[in-house]
Image (tube, rainbow, N blue to C red; front, side, top):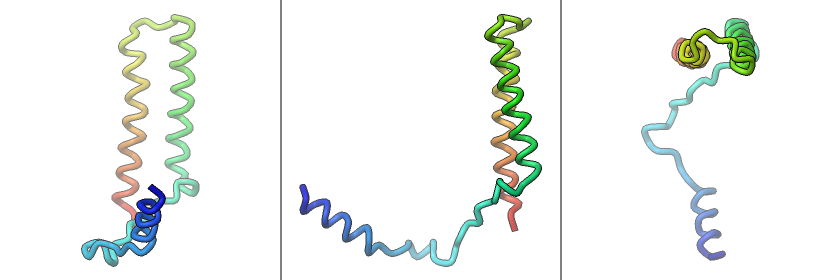
Length: 89
């Protein structure tokens, strides 16, 4: 077992990039400095807290609509992240 691990570590340490990946570096967006992301995530977290309180107190009119709005905020946040990562220079 130890011999196999050592062989794995040597190959992993000396690995080379795939030829197609050479020179292709993806830029990772800095979300800490993006005011639009901060605002959207702040409202998303606040809405999740509101939905949680509504569900705890059974103060909802329609359970399915309440849960749907909570899921919609997460989906919109995901799409926002996709748009930001595509539009990076």
